[in-house]
Image 1 (spheres, helix red, strand yellow):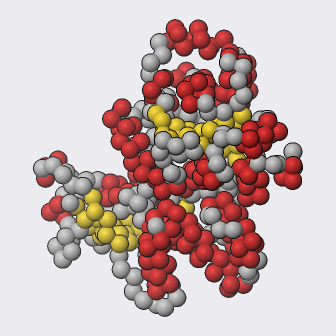
Image 2: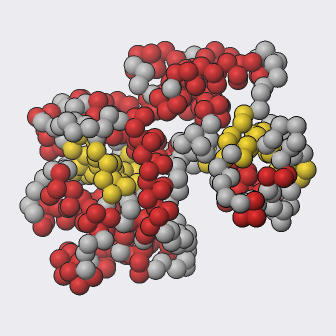
Length: 419
């Protein structure tokens, strides 16, 4: 089906803005979206307190669904996080406690509230934890009800399994069950909330198709799947990965200024694509901006940064980030060092922090990236290069400011203030 054949606002918008990779039943889905309210969902595992910008295309898909009169359903993987999605992974995820998973879900929800309207109306978004049903299943019941609908032959053929085995990386039986759990999510959502559409990235195609097939086979109801293309930058890199680490969506992990800078530093060749995917700017305005060349392309990058940052952090934060950036890089003004407040509760004897903690608290990178940066000698705290073996307590703050000055290289600085 070509873009001209789509008759629903939802699929026309997705097609013209570049979101569509595969659709399981395009004509049926187009008719359903044209004739009524389509409830569609995307699942997000709660492995960290924040999603990163690599998940933003999925969040924007839910936003497009709501803008077109559909109902977005956000599934937080309180249950599936306990297993871990093996898709694209070379190793098993560490297992998290129930308390950590729930804290992560609460933190992640604050981001979705910036992009979607939640409520009780027919097109209002809802957020559901799949632990509501997955934790209730007994093992024998789960196998009897759903095990017969999946063959090992087919599961081994999916890339998420096949690539891991080809690399001779172990895959636990726990992870092998992830596809079944995700498929049952779709069935439960269809029964409980009338959800007929599952969306996701192209790497989720196998899991999504399995869920569509399960709904159609078990309950003989309509179900559709839609995936986005694999999103990479013009340089071939993975979206959301930078030399400074992951580009987090929660302000506690990455402040508005650095978020604005991420978009401002987009490759020239990515500007048009990013404007279509990650902003609400009209397509005619996007066409004008992406046609700019030479030094004028910087105006398009600033428009991208302004729009993306406004959507996540608000117009005031975006304006402040732009002013700070222009002052530092265009007017030669000294840029103030951002202060990040961190909860340092408890007695001093139990609140000594590792350098990795301070680096990630500063929003410079994740714990994993922080360890790598420290090993490479790139991190200084209070002016001294750290080797990773130090710990820091309240008594180690800079006495002049009452905080820790955390620096990566020559360009990135934050102050971490214990509170």
